[in-house]
Image 1 (tube, one colour):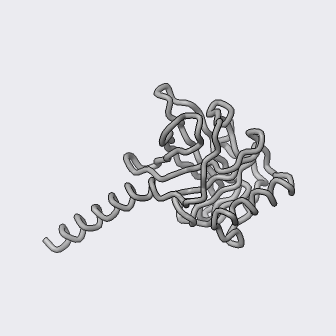
Image 2: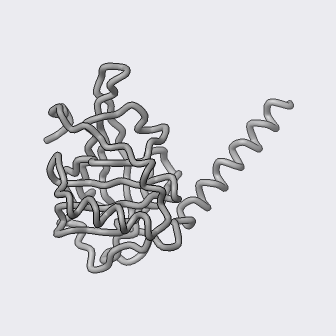
Length: 182
């Protein structure tokens, strides 16, 4: 009986925190407007990120976006776990939280549980700065395995203006070809 109560309370807390997390984007993490999802589709290389559980020990991380027939976005994240010496991947779905010309999405890798995903800076659909559900989630993405220094610095400044502690960024090695890269 005690275990059932603990499980019920834990699941309720998880559900509540998930519902809240989607609406609790950092206040200054405003999504870009005039967003064209079709131009955003394809492969993005992770240049930098904050370390968190799902990407722990990953290098050569990439995100691949494709359009589903229902208008949602298929998300395939992959990377090389250098401690386990193997490639890993996770498949998810992203949906717009409002107008489709605003880069405010919610992403799920676990069924009905979504987290916020705002593209807060975008350079010619070649480089992107992405804010997650709170100040613990941040990514710098590029269509290539590198990023120009001026774009990198602009994104760092933008992230700091939002409130991110950019000294926590992990600079991701991109030295292997992913078996998931199409």
